[in-house]
Image (cartoon, rainbow, N blue to C red; front, side, top):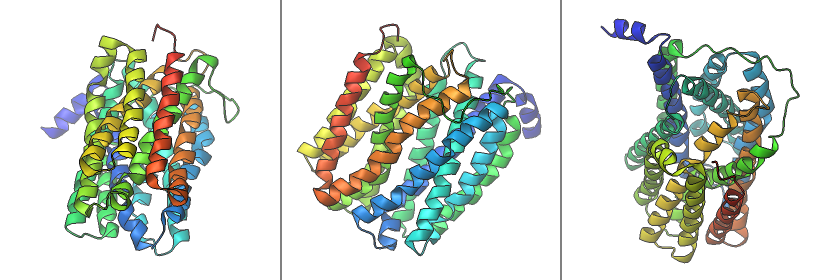
Length: 386
C-alpha cells in the first residue's frame, strides 16, 4: 500500500511539494539540533564569549565562500541534484561538532558545515519556487514554516537531551544518521527542473528593485541567527537561568517563528507584503529592546516571542520576491540577494560576542534593536504595490 501511494506521488504536484517540505524539515531539524547544544559545546572547549564569537565566524565564512559556487551550479544543474549534495554533506558534518576536542577542529567543522548548509538552503528554496509555480495560491511561507517546525522539534529534542545529560556527540550523531535515511527515502520524489544554463560571473548584485529587500533580509538574518547563537548564552550569563529554562527559552522563540510562518501565507494575502514586513520590523526592534530594558526571565521570554514572530516571514517573502526577478534567473536572484542577506549572518552574530565582552550582552541586544529600526526605514521605501 505504501509503495502504491509513493508511486502515485511521483511526478505529481503533491509529491513534489511533499519532498521539498521534507528537505526543509531536514535542514531545520539538523540546524536546530546543533543550536540547542551550542552552550554545552562552548563549555566543553572552555571558551569565553569573545573566543566563541570568533569560532562562530567559521560557520558563516564557510557559507559565504560557497555562495558563488552554489549560484553557478544552480544555473548549470537541476536544483534537485544540488539539494541532494547539500543534504548529504550537511547531515554528515552535523555529526562532528560534539567530537571536537580542540578549537581548530571545531573551526574546520563549522567551515564545512556552513558551506553545506548554504548549498542545501539555496537549492531547496529554488525547488520551492519550482513547486510554487504549480500552485495558484501562495505556499512559500509554509515551506519555511515546516523549517521552523523542524527547528522547534530539534530544540525540543535538544531540551530532552540536556535534561537527560546526553552528550552532544551522541545526540548529533543520532540525528545525522536519521536525517541521511530520510534524505535517501524522499529524494526520488523531488522535481526535475530545467537549469537556466546562464554563464554569468560568480556574483551578481541584486537589481535596484531587489536591493532594498536584500537589506531587509540582512537585518532579519542577522537578528534570527543572533537568536540561534546567543539566546541560550544570554539566559545563562545575563539572567543566570538554569539549563532547563535556557533551553525552554529557545523553544519559545522557535514556537513563535513556527506559528508566524504557518500563518504567513494567509496574512500576506490579507494585508500585503509591505504591511507584514513593517510590523515584522517593529516586533524585532521592540523584542530586543524589551530584553535590554527588562532583563528578567518572564519579560525576556516575551521579548524572544516578539522577535520570533518578527523574523518569521521576512526571509520567505524576500526569497519569493527574488524568484520573480525579470533581470536574473531564480538561481542567480536567490544567490545575489542571499549574499547580502547572509552578510548579516556573517558579521552580526559573532560581533555580539565581541560587544558582550567589551560592554555586556544587554548592550549587544540594544544594537540588535537599532538594526530593527533600520529595517523599519527600508520597509518605508518599498512601493505600495507590495
